[in-house]
Length: 259
Image 1: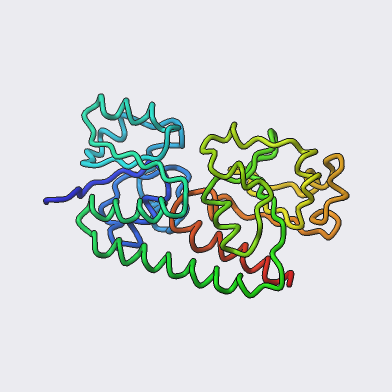
Image 2: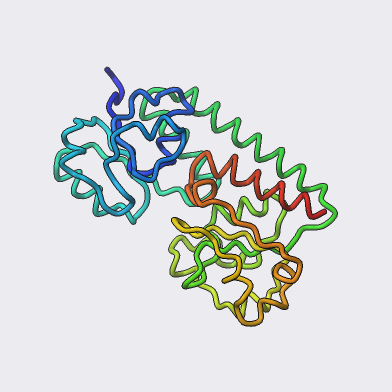
């Protein structure tokens, strides 16, 4: 076959994209965090996020391994040393997510289908943005990516907040790719007075009581008016199709309901 036929995906967004392109049968191994689509969970699980079962991956004889970000650099280096073909994506914005989809399509010989998928996702986002443009006003939004330390949203998340109809309260941090560069002081969040808080603590359930109890946060509009909403990390913190569909739609629906 001219294109890869045995693919291992070390993160969920490439798995989801391949299934949307009708190429799920090429996947021979997935991340243990995979939840979408449900049938993907039947595939052999070969990795967490920063560790992997190298011997298991080798045993699957993949002709392509797909990975994401600097956090998987060590995994990828070991797989390369073991003779694997590895492609690492590093998408951090909405535009880069759409580019990743198109690039992945080219890698597997489905360029036209991938470009159509990217165009469809872009069109959906444009329709959401058009709907949001009719809101009476845009709410100030704090997206809480982690609780301790307190971390604001990564770039694609903050862009989706804006598309959904909100105004991120830390726009100056949105382009910081590393989480450590998006750590914010609780007092500064309170000073900026968010009207809505979206929280997504990757891998654990959001505790609204913890958010409400922070010193000074009782005076913020979001806490005062009980506008704290959890967005499951699987729908928003993975830079792939789910964030551009389920994640942004959930935020848009909430913001629209506030009038």
